[in-house]
Image (tube, rainbow, N blue to C red):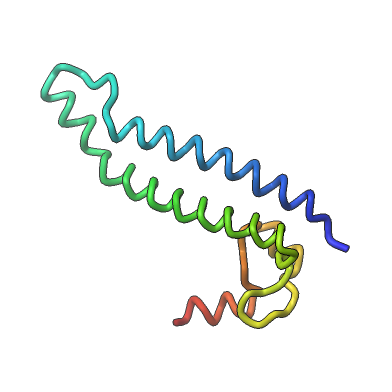
Length: 111
């Protein structure tokens, strides 16, 4: 039997890290403590687009992590959501929020 607790802890740890990252990005985008100098403000705002993209990517990863945690609770964590075959633990080591086996992940990318 696979160690669900190990994967659950990996996901919870990653969830905490991503939540911290999202909070930091939100704070940076709000420009709390922004310089009163207009020139410096312009420079500080240059990174907003990059920060926004990082925030969106982080929110998507957080969603996948939450879905993986739900799959753990429902007993479906090691089962591919497309074909029903087992997702190898080695794949979940690399991508603990993956819901597809290698074959189905490849098919999903091609569509």
